[in-house]
Image 1 (cartoon, rainbow, N blue to C red):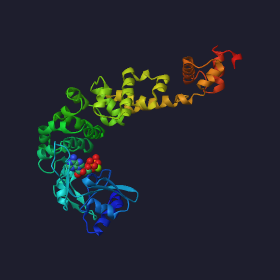
Image 2 (cartoon, rainbow, N blue to C red):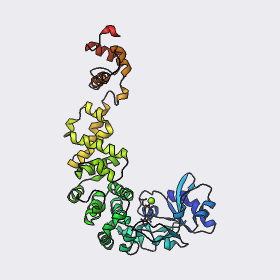
Image 3 (cartoon, rainbow, N blue to C red):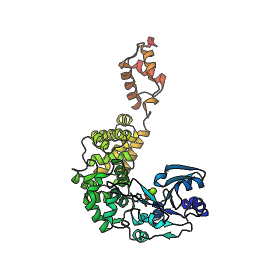
Image 4 (cartoon, rainbow, N blue to C red):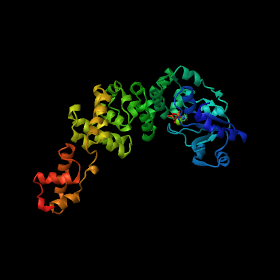
Length: 404
Ligand code: ATP
Ligand code: MG
């Protein structure tokens, strides 16, 4: 058994010792069978939430009304969820209520895709009533049960299906795909936050282009924030290598760029992204718009933008133009390394030095002089050293010697 499961075995054994059933379930079992990196290990059990809380000394109640308790075992947090079936689905969203059951089968049956509905016991034996291993072997994403019903219960599952295409490179089972096409409008019932979470995973996956293509083919894009009239641009977006974008900010900036979004802040707000990300994307796009070739990167410009934003902007531009991204990044890093100062705070003089040297009270002029000095330091006209800067100002006749 692989290490992440080994580490959690104590929880399963403790539950079993007290007469409950307990299994590993969900993404971890799927990823183990795929030989992928195993993420969070989740456990399903017949014990009720309060029973789980009684058994383990360190627990956090993160949603016991839905059956989930976090158990901290040897410093690691595990979600332990009581076997459950979902109550009635209202408005094609997650159910308000759940019913706890004592059968693993019922619990697996409420899960979204067959590959996610496999349980593993403490000996590594698999319980797979819906043919999940088969689906994994054939690289197919298929709902547990009738896809139309399952998507109508919870419309987010349609987005999940396509983000798994992006993460795993699997294909959609034909019936599952047809059901997405049929039920796409139900996505309108899902909260933006949940859609955004899936969409971001989709953009990050190694098969993002294929997944974007499916968003268009199934018409799901129509129900995503502000994408309704972007069909042809989305089609274009499928032609790029999204794997080259390596941060959240880069991906959103690239999306805005390729989709020709006029007002990125409004677009990103519609996706309910945090302000920090919106600001970052706006800055990066502003740099992209004002950089036309890599020759535009002067020391001064790089200093003003900062390395991270500069790299993001050049990555967006290079990916869009099919140019060599690594080369661009390398050049920028080298240029940045050659800068005598990397940030304003590294400048050896401050406003109060300037006021003292000039013998004048503060005002906007101080900033201007500091900017002059900054430029001179970046271009290595003067060393970033307080005395050298002072001499340089005297030499330039900006201050008279007796003033000091
Ligand atoms: P990831 O690697 O992204 O975490 P995951 O398969 O573990 O993928 P989670 O969102 O962590 O996905 O959900 C854990 C498990 O819960 C899934 O494997 C699936 O069995 C079940 N599940 C999650 N969301 C749904 C849903 N909307 N409908 C039905 N089952 C779901
Ligand atoms: Mg998970």
